[in-house]
Image (cartoon, rainbow, N blue to C red; front, top):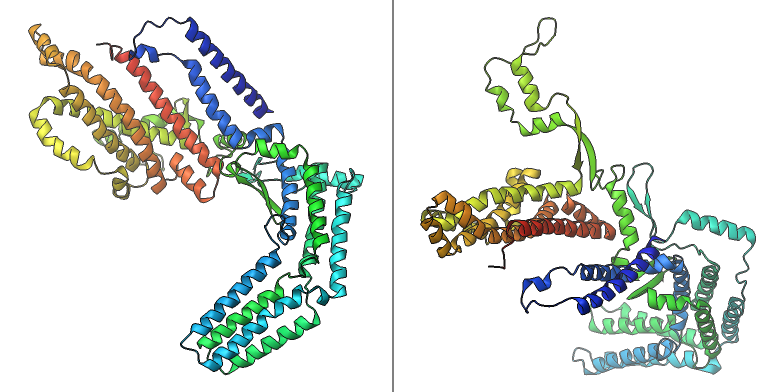
Length: 640
């Protein structure tokens, strides 16, 4: 139901925004020249259209629209796929799906192989004339086996009766299949089947284990037929499997063929008995007997012996296609780039719906992973925990504050009682060993990744911006620090990751320091470019008005450097996110990169797409925040 509502809302939003945009174009006064940034401002309605288009494509190619509007279509297509899978072996024997009979193709192939071996034998310099004569005789006898199978006069009556019997079963199945009440299910069988369907679950639903709270996926596509149409195809597939097995057990082995192939095998066995297994003549004889065995086990019949069976199969195939009715249109229009396929008793999605998770399933799993009772690897994606303020104080204050105070820490008395003194109370404060009040604090995989990026970025800004301004204004600073910065800046962050993680550990310290290194070089380059690019006329004007060096730095150089600095921050955010995920891939027990790495190992596509979406949204959040800061802090940009 939710997917249907979202789909309709998307259509209405797209149509409404397009109509609004066209009306706005007709009514809006365009007085800005081409190239003026004001022409690109606004346009929220086009943002909605673009976002809706992406979501609509996702809904369509993930088959979520098919699931929302026709939730049982996958189950029905599964039963149809079972029929097609059962028919495939039979149809493959006839020129239905192929251009010619399989037996015809087999005969052409084996005759070609025999001809090729014969030519090799005749042109071989390692074989003597006697060996060539014997091997050529084997080839001649092998080629004479085929007419013994294709001759109508040699077809046994029992074999023909068996073919007619199988043909009759196919015709009877077709006749029954076209009846409305096929497969003649009783009321009790119907109730039992519906109960089994309910226990099996729906298409692509997600379950949570009651014992462990972990997420469990059900089977990809429900196998038990959930509708009467699905039951019809399911039962027909079972009958077709029995008919197919019966046909492929049948062999057109008349007495003449049996005598000839036994004679050929015995002669080749006797010939190879006295030869070395590596002998060339022995290898040729071995290959010839392999061809004879392939002919023996192939379903080769006289040209017209299977015509009635072929017509019966075509008749059933047409009947089952007609019975699909509107399901064929659902398959064509709502299952793009693939369909539901069957392999034996199981069914699976084959196409874009397999690797592109459905938004409904993804959202459902995302909500479950947010909860601490489920989470991912016992940690929620994002949750709020009530933490005592004392823990924060203990985290922020260093323990050495208590160590530098005069006096000794309290010692227990002979009665086993410890009386606190001032130094002991201070130690409790700096270690957070006291109670105050609790405040909500976020935690989880998302928060860990967010905090690492934020801290690495903040440290990079705090150190990189002043150093970059200093390098842009001072000859010594530029000459001293420039080689150091340019030495490590071109090195990819992942090249530093193994070294930093091995030295600082896999906890937050190593990851934050790695992100600090990434953002530091970007901020230094940005601030230096901004400082050195300040217009000299503005600096001279400030000097002529009596401004000091600090005032020039604060009111002239720094404001003129802000556009470069803020642009550098936007670039650093993207670099930090890319580096963080890679670092969490290499070493980590929490974070978005860790979640994606584990999900990759278990082919959890929904989780992978969730992590991609989260990274994109967090990056967008950072970027939108920076855009607002840019609009507020440097409103003059582009207007000078």
